[in-house]
Every structure is written in C-alpha cells, then in structure tokens.
Length: 133
Image (cartoon, rainbow, N blue to C red; front, side, top):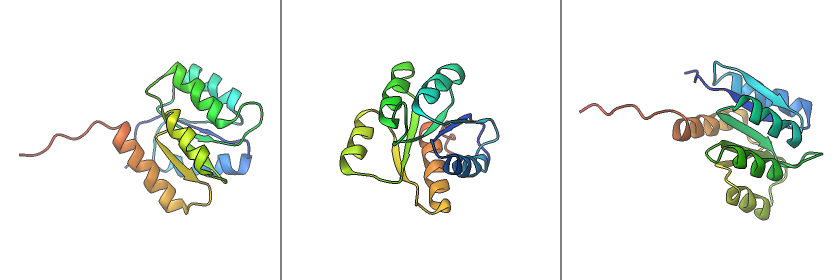
C-alpha cells in the first residue's frame, strides 16, 4: 500500500540519502524531498512541511539533534525518525527527549527499515480505520 504522504530524507552522505529515498518511495506516492545537512533540513521543513522526516544524527553545519529541535519548534507534532550509524544511549535518549518518535540504525536490514517506517506511518500519520461491528 502506498501512503499519500510527503517525506523528507536528511543525510550528509549522498549514498545513504539516495538509499533511504528509494526505500521510502516504495511506501509513499508523493514527493520525497532530500536535504544534505541540518540547516537545509530546517529550511526545507519550514518551506514544504513534510509529513515524515528521516533525519541523520551526525552531519556538518547543524547536527540532527539540533535540526530536530528546530523542526519541533516549527511544528511540535512533526513526525521524525532519527537515523544513524552510531547510536549511543545518550544520543537515543536525547533524540527521544527532543521529540523523535523512533531511532533506526543505518545497518538495519532494508525490509526491517521499511517495516519500522510503515509502523510509524500507521501509528502517527494514517487515520485509524473504523472498526466493523
């Protein structure tokens, strides 16, 4: 099922950004935006208001945790999934404290990433279907 959502993928590594974009494009039928750093992500979020953001933690200019805080200032209900290759307990706790709804390691198998993103979409962005009684 393709969801009618606009998604933004943020990572300073072009390869990772493109890889995540391909994974997300299999789940949504609207625009997938790309940003290469936290500064660009905050500006793009402000301009385009994507429904979902996949946001790298370690980036130049503005790291992902700083960008997360600024995105949450713009839209407190923004749905943001943090992505990283190195996840310390402190970073995971800070991301949760700043409002990230999930944390994905970049070495997670692609099927598992798709499953996690789908769960987040269904939990946070898709209206529940009425129950049949």
